[in-house]
Image (cartoon, rainbow over all chains, first blue to last red; front, top):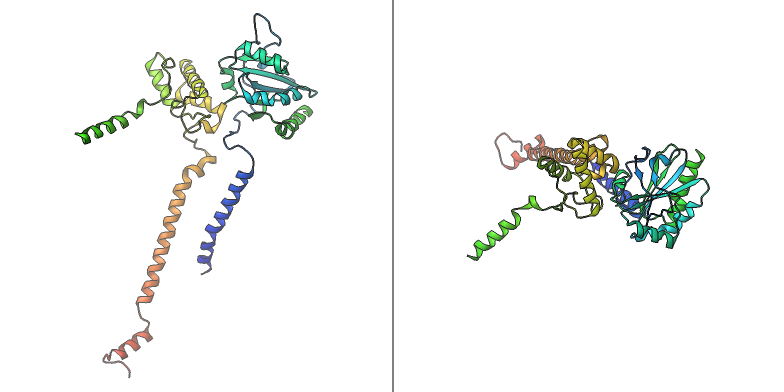
Length: 185
Length: 159
């Protein structure tokens, strides 16, 4: 008798459990379309990208994977045609002022003249910028859109990936704690 | 006549699913065999922007880039499995339209079958218990049999 009673209760418990899990996902605030990075704790992909050159002039040197060793680096994929990139620009600029943190950019599928104009108009927070004209390097980073931001540790390993614009909240709650932890290493 | 035309239209409309894809004319490799392999791989990789289409079916720029990457790796000499592993290493499990088979995904693969099996077991148990109960109800106890005989005026029954 008691076994049968128990069997009646089990589906109810399962249903309540599922409802709790569903509620936590719905209220968690995380975009379900965002995918976890496959590259966390893996070394930065090997690449060598040229600088933005307009009429033979460059304002920042290019970027290659040899530039990460010994530093804590924030790599920001951006483009002048990308509206969320403009939205996150103040945060990237703020991050470029963090002591000890190196902020570099990868210009994704952007005409050099357009990128250069955008940086001149909105400010250039990057110490180095690599031009990824066809997006081949982006594929190596597992990119599926711009903007995306990566944190690289002193050993050249990818430790964090953020998909989408770096909002003030993301900067304060996700990026900065990770930056502090990596700088302490 | 109209029915014939209607049937013909429907047959033609649904008859060519294999040729529907987003691969542009300039993308195909010259080597037909490599291109066939590229298409086969492309059908197994998910377009992460559209998320419900393969990279062969999607128009998204990322799908185009991934198709280009697949063809580049094939020309470089990778096997189909190596190409898929290359993309998988960079984009994770979700890029595979067919989920991988490892301990983490056993629940995904075997879950439905297990649930089905459990349900069948429960149904069989329920049916069995119902049958035994009905049999118990159908046969009379000795006392009930005696009373029935008495009522039916059977010879040998007590008064």
